[in-house]
Amino acid sequence: MKISINEKLIKRNKIITQVSLYAAIGLIAIGLFISFSNPDKAKILLSYLVLLPAYIMMQINVLMANKWGRNPRVDQIISNSLKGLDNRYSLFHYTTPVSHLLVGPAGIWIIKPYHQHGIITYDEKKKKYLQKGGGNFLSKLFAMDTLGDIERDTQRQISTLQKYFEKIGLKDYPNPLIANVFFNPEAKIQAKNAPETTINIDKLKDLIRQTVKKSPLRDEITNKILKKLPGTE
Image 1 (cartoon, one colour):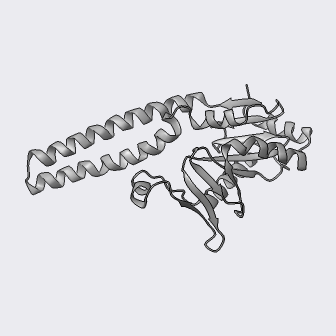
Image 2 (cartoon, helix red, strand yellow):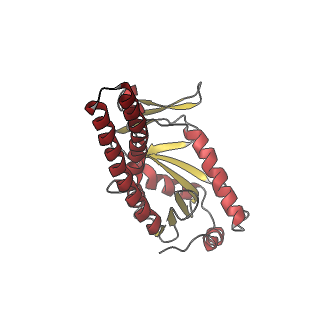
Image 3 (cartoon, rainbow, N blue to C red):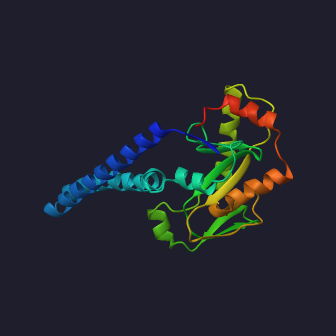
């Protein structure tokens, strides 16, 4: 498998993650100092004005740390899960408008990683993915650990990819496929009824191999797509 990765973007965002953490900690310290050093109402109000942006920065930092600061990083986890695919496959990390894109005999795959844990299900009546367990409501809220609208995000990513393909002059390609992959070992997927493929990440490679057996993409089509995309290594 060939891999194309935007190392400059990763390095830059790791630095931003570290700087934002130090800045948030610094603002929290200042806000607490103002609050405890003087009980005057005006001073307390000032401390809130400092602590509020600090809290927002800390929440953003949690998201960034999950993506850029962890070891192994999300892109490394995905790459490792697909080890063993042959060189007809190309995996793109942050080099196209969608973060993780796989192109090969199994088609065009947008890989959407999720770090959440607990039991992941799909409610057909509400047409919504649900998460049971994985912390209580407050912990999910303050740690920004909720699933969000998975299907809406899918439509956004598909639209973004299609616009990108149009921009680079790529036409007559198969519809992009979606893989929602959960890489937390404590995530249990019970969403076979979901409209999108939703699996633990250790099943991703098997999914790709099963897909190519059922409906392989001709090499000429794959090569046509790859010629338009960023170079691989």
